[in-house]
Amino acid sequence: MSVKIGVSPISWTNDDMPELGRDTTVEHCLQEGKQAGYSGFELGGKWPRETSILEPLFNKYNMDVVSSWFCGGLLKDSIEVEIKRITPHMQLLKDLGTDVIVYCEMDACVHGDISSPLSMRPTLSEDQWQDWTDKLNQLAKYTLSHGMQLAYHHHMGTIVQIEEEVDKLMAMTNKDLGLVLDTGHLIYAGSDPLKVYEKYSDRVLHIHCKDVRGAALDDSLKADSSFLNSVLNGVFTVPGDGDFDFPGLFKMVSDNEYSGWIVVEAEQDPAKAHPLTYVTMGYKNIESYCEKFGIQIEEKA
Image 1: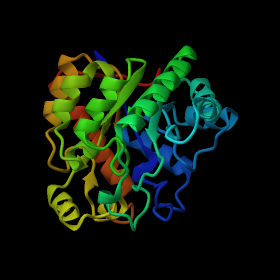
Image 2: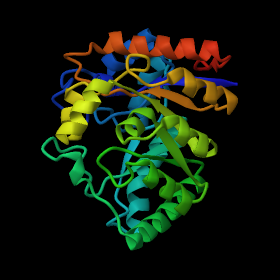
Image 3: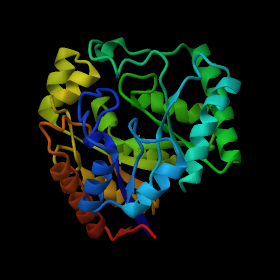
Image 4: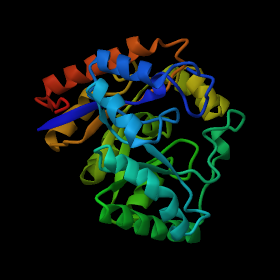
């Protein structure tokens, strides 16, 4: 079995807080990502949206496109409106050679508002859950008909945050919809990522690896902090620099013969956490976990 190791630009620049890494260029991110050892990169808000620009840029650094986040709006919009919105995004990713769309419902979310504590996040009634997941099933079927699988990203400050909501989402959708397993968000929400992975390994399409600093998390929970203030206070870090049992996760990855992308996605303030230093640390730690459990790391062809 083999996995591919990618990285998110969020260690360098932050879409929710554009002042973090504001002057860092896309090419700088790619150059350092390649230097650290990664074979793939997620797209971010700064990235051009034209295949004619992105393809030669990624080829220059011999990097693959991992995927790109899509801000869902199915709580308010019709399935027809959502299909119209997602189609250009889907086509861009398909043209760039990837087959997974990272998707998260963003209506009424609070994770991007530094003044909103996470206790103010939205929740759904039973009727809203039914209506929303019905449309989500339709959307996943649509993208799959074009060779692209939707992978839902649970996230702090949104309608799918805690483990019970991940369970509900998985129960109310079919296997056309995949899952992004994000270790950091699960830990922040009070869940065990190993338990969640064990339940839904057959639907996990991407694994986002972020570690959590327990002391910073305790402070955030006690203060009912906003998500962005928690990030600024250092709640997240790269794999192996916090408190999570990453060797336990990679043993399960090996046992389940997972063969998708492993993505280092640990938002920090780049002025405090030097991006190249931290993404290199994350890569080397993942490399060691893979070696320990006999997982081959696939390079870009």
